[in-house]
Image (cartoon, rainbow, N blue to C red; front, side, top):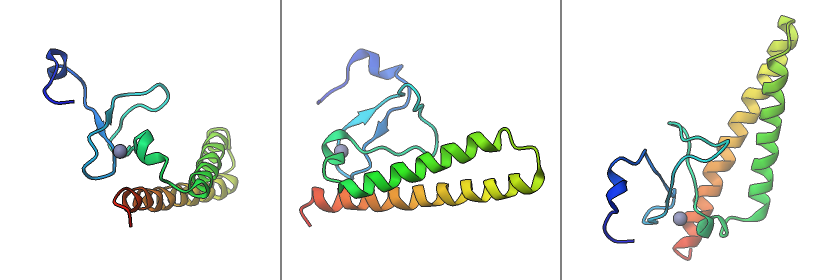
Length: 112
Ligand SMILES: [Zn+2]
């Protein structure tokens, strides 16, 4: 892992694992293209995250996706507002869980 390959210079941005000190990175993934708000935890550290946190976050993400797909088709303003609120909450929940999950991975990686 020391030194860089010739190709590294032209390489697109890589995302670092969210656990400080971890040297793992990844590039774009199918269906999960890198963006400004994307954070990522490598497989090694992901294993340290309690299962229920991952499940809770997945539920929030599913809720968000469902609401977003409904939003695209809803025409009535009132219905749109309701669904939009659902999406907003699911997104907030999803982020809250991500931060919690990241903290768990970090704490466990240093053996707290
Ligand atoms: Zn890591």
